[in-house]
Amino acid sequence: MMDWSKIPNLDWALQLNAAMRRKLEDSFEETHTYWTYLNELLGFLRTPNVRGVQEKIADANHIQKFYSTVSELEFARILASKGKQVTLLADDYLENRTSPDMLVTDSLREAYIEVKRLTEGQAAYNILDFLRSYLNHPQRRYVVSIALNQELSIPVTKREERLSKERIAQRIIERFPSAFQTADLNVLPTSFKIDGVTFRIEATTKSMRGYPGVIRSAVIQVPTEKWQEKFTQDVCDKAKKREGWTGEHLSKYYIVAIDCEEKYLDEDDVESCLTGSEGIFLTNPLTKNVSGVLARFVTGRVYLISNPSAYDEINIAQIQNYLD
Image 1 (cartoon, rainbow, N blue to C red):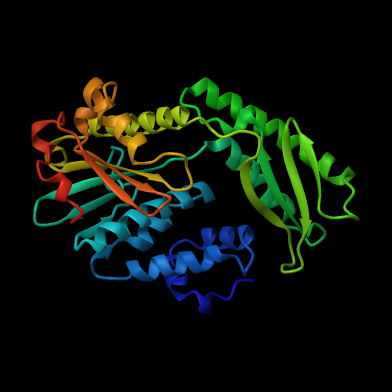
Image 2 (image 1 turned 135 degrees about the vertical axis):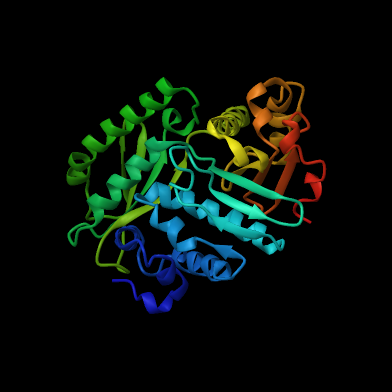
């Protein structure tokens, strides 16, 4: 059981979400560095310049949504550190409409920020969720790491491609208990494969239960162009969200923030997606809804690219100075 007195900021943030508190305890051993990271992040956000943290986390009803919320919190930290007033918005902020993630106020004007975490998709997380549940047992005190095959490593944008990956993941999940039970666990580490996905099993003595380890692509390097395609689709999806808004909401700047942490894109890749000869700012009318795109990279760098084609009412001439 986690000693919450050692992580008081995270304890405070989860006051309205007891279910997620239990989910995190089930997902990470007490010594995992994720606890320290979350506590430090939330400690920074416990300031009058940032509002709505507890309410935002209260909306996280499953672990993947919590991870997405953490990406929102990272952007809130970035914006607050630049002297802006940040209000994290609950899912029902706009009645009968899909709400943005945060409202940011400074001397220029109010801006809605919509955050997207660039990920490989739901299929891999389905496997992780299964492992967290399966290994949460006193007789299965093992760490199981995952090396994805090519089918599950490549990011996809089309619905049928996504469903195909999820079907593969479900088949692997169904076969895992049998493969685990027949594995030789007397000599560790050991490993086995299911449909090309490798599961490596190691013992743990630090916890009374098992847990999933790292998940990675061991067989390929995901082509940059596939991540560019995914990035482009994510921006367009967020741009479409604004089309359902009316009234005063349309007068606020609209910035799409993409969290590229641990992915294979850099500043040049992002700029090509947005402003290159085939970039969506120039070729996709949907992105007229977007004042600019804010990208956060694994290096810690944050990069903001304005959209000169944005609708006049949300076109920010000074956007390049937005983070100064």
